[in-house]
Picture 1 (tube, helix red, strand yellow):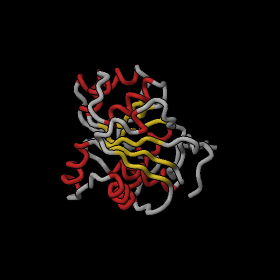
Picture 2 (cartoon, helix red, strand yellow):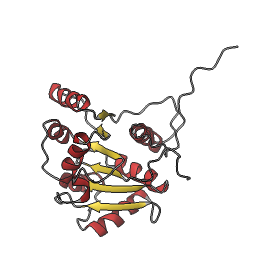
Picture 3 (cartoon, rainbow, N blue to C red):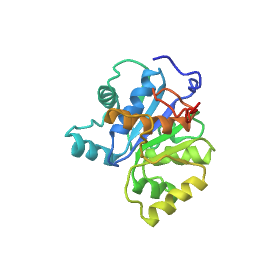
Picture 4 (cartoon, rainbow, N blue to C red):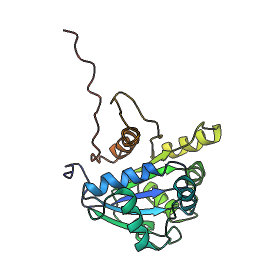
Length: 214
């Protein structure tokens, strides 16, 4: 797959993975960005390790080099692109600073506890710090909440993030592109999330409008 002309090649994408259910969304995001020769700084929260175990029976290693190989194996992209994995506790990492020039950040999937802490301006780990940096620097932060139903507290926290400039892209697929597989449904959400950063690297049948009856 060729690199999209709109892909921000000069700056990396920060990919945050929380402990929400639906880690497959993060896997597909990483797959498409790496296949497009993108650069990714990935930070997975401590809770995501437990979710990997619960959802897939898979152990996510903690060592950054082993974790890079783990994520590449999950994404099925052994060599393309560039991937850097950061430990969740390393608040001194590059992505924790506003001087690190990133294209933006996607938190996918995003738990409601993470949403709450981001809305309150709290940073208990590297993922939350990196997201907070995007907002304070006026850069693009895309949050993909994976929860249902939303409580009033959830909605208020999401509203606070939206008012602060974050883009909220719930993990809600559509059917107008005539999906044939679960992967098609997942890729729709991933594509819409990356659209918020002007990254177009997911094969997607986009809405063409109604055809004329004439």
